[in-house]
Amino acid sequence: MTSNRALVSGLFLLFAIRLLAMIWVPLTDPTEARYAEIARIMVDTGNWITPQFDYGIPFWAKPPLHTWLAAIGIEAFGSSPFAARIGILFSTILTLVIVWRWTRSVSDPRSSIVATLVTASTGVFFFSAAFVQTDMVLTLGVVASMAGFYNGLKGSRSWGWLFFLGLAIGLLAKGPIAVVLTMTPIALWMIWRRDWQILTRLPWIGGTILCLALVLPWYAAAEIATPGYLRYFLIGEHIERFLVPGWKGDLYGSGREHAKGTIWLFWIIATLPWSPLLPVLLWRYRKTPIFDDEGLHLYLLLFALTPLVFFTAAANILIAYVLPGIPAAAILAVILWTRMRIPGGFWLKLGLAEITVFTVGLISISIFDGTRTLLPTEDRLVAVYQDRGRLAILRGRSFSSEFYSKGEVTKIKSMDDLSKWLTAGDGVLVRKADRDALDTRFGSTLSFLSEDKNYALYISNGAPGVQ
Image (cartoon, rainbow, N blue to C red; front, side, top):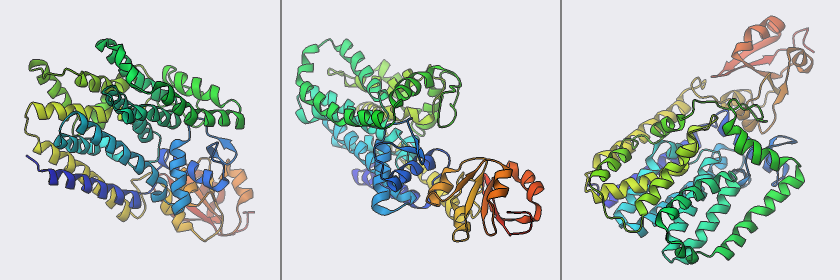
């Protein structure tokens, strides 16, 4: 068996690798660079009420908690990938602390460490641990609520307050979906349990007041600042996005349409190397049930399955949507694993090895791939052009170029507009598909400098014909 010291060392190894990736792996387009740029604009404008998709354009797709976390890091440490990511990493650490404390309260100290390590080394959890987006902050809220509710029913007032605090975090991280992912498994579990009297152990009045006091002020201020926000967010983002195939109402991109039920395939991929483990344990549990008088196993199973069941009928989904249920799956797997006395050293070592190899490879690409041919980011092109002149991007938007240039990228819609804008020494980012058209239009008046995965960088040499 793996010793406690080895388990803790494994956690520190994961933490160290993730820190290095935060520093060396650049922000990539479109998702992470977009949210980091929104946070940078928040700091730049001083507008902490309304996140902005671009200067003057409100970002209604998500509440601001993850943006606040990224913006606080940028405010404190400057505009860098590490600064934008540090707040998300903090929310990940809090999530793992709750996993550890909750597992310790319902099992044994060793299982609590193993559950924390399994959670941390699950593929999508590890890579979301410092990824600038909403899902890890949502996961913190959901895990806090679910742990707080279960332990609050056992008589712990502090855990009971955590239930309501978690709801507030979820509502400020991603909105009503946090309530759905929390209250659905709780309602099903309570119906199964049929012991409604125990609900009186939770601080309903004080907890509700706390939750509303934390949540309502921002929602009201957001609607006042930009009327129409609540309709778009509550109806468009929470109903139409998931039920309307190829949803056309997205103001900030296009819906990602998948076949219904794809969320289950996403779960298998996202939970590697552990995805085979829980189904096997549940199958063995069916044949040799373990005594569970407090319904913990069912509670965790419902918690783990709710995101999958909820998004089964959804058309527009992302792999990160499985994230909120992963800690519950890890805790349940470890508890069953321990009580069935199944040797597990190999699985733990495999999990650590997988994450280590993949992340070291990603870091190596970031350091040694000088042209960034594999990563969708324009950080290197911005660095190549730094201190030369004005920089533009033609027929598109690269959030990474905006972040790394601190917003100093002009968006040009057409070749004609580019011709009017260019002066000697100016640079332009052009999608590779547009290079032939650019060469035909400008010829020798533009000189090629560098390229990456998506864009080529040209500089104006001031030849006649360029204004």
